[in-house]
Image (tube, rainbow, N blue to C red; front, side, top):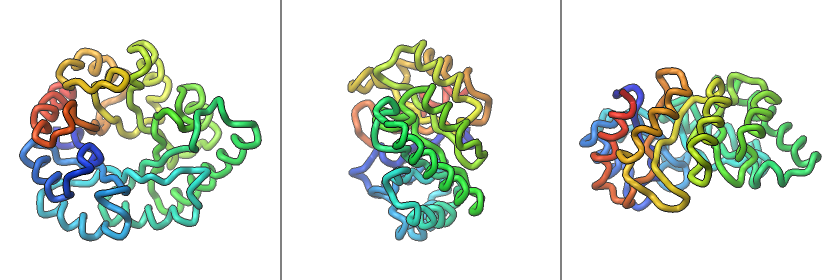
Length: 244
């Protein structure tokens, strides 16, 4: 379990990195995806890396808020350097700033060009850039995400996966199956639209989701049902049961 189950730090934006690592250690989670917005901006990577070592936790991804097509590509090497300082070769990025259907042909071509250039930078640095499976980005649908993966066509340009709380179980499974060959990490939570529920109540559906992917994917808890860090142990236990 230590090699597959972890936490996304943005689950606890109000807590310090030290508090998060302490709670993770108690919950038996030893992989973390740091968010670059609050907990680990690039300039704090060395400090956070030292804390990780102290608590016996490894960084499995750097959750940046770098937005392809919007953030200048000149800033990407700084995020890559921070990721390597943290000990990971995976960076999470956002692709664009609106849903795929809202892009004109010219805007789509420009975005895809930026993605290809980013993939080249990632290849030179030997890291992997992963897009969010998320609304209000280009990868909001399985068809758009697949088209992007095929257009960039690089082992250094991949995907995350997470269920869409506004879609049905069947629709989410279809997305998972189609994008499974391109997926590195998975964000795990139990939402129904905007309402959050304990992960334990969704164990059956999550086992169906995970059957769409090969073994060894990193499963990262994202957000608690009540937003409390004290709930991490129970959610972590549920995650481990799902991962069995």
